[in-house]
Length: 97
Image 1: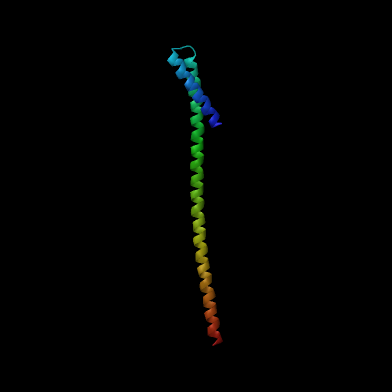
Image 2: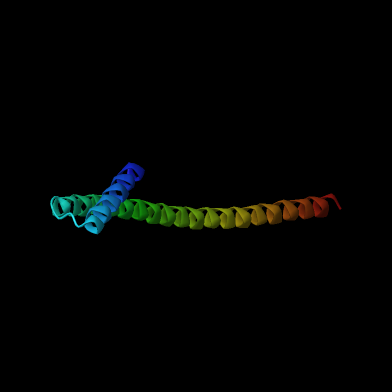
């Protein structure tokens, strides 16, 4: 959609430039008005796309932080389990002697 819209804007702009260079005044104002409306639509679409991209980036950054925290929590839990297992082995060895 944005590519089609941009192609229409480009075509109208080139047509307007050509008409102005030829000294044609009839219909130029209408074409400029149409081109400007299309430009507003195009910029609005681009703005929405940029905003969507920013939203996606924020989501991914938050997701990364959450996953990093989960990994850190998991490492702590694993370290705790390792200590418990080591302590059990030591206690078992102590009880055997």
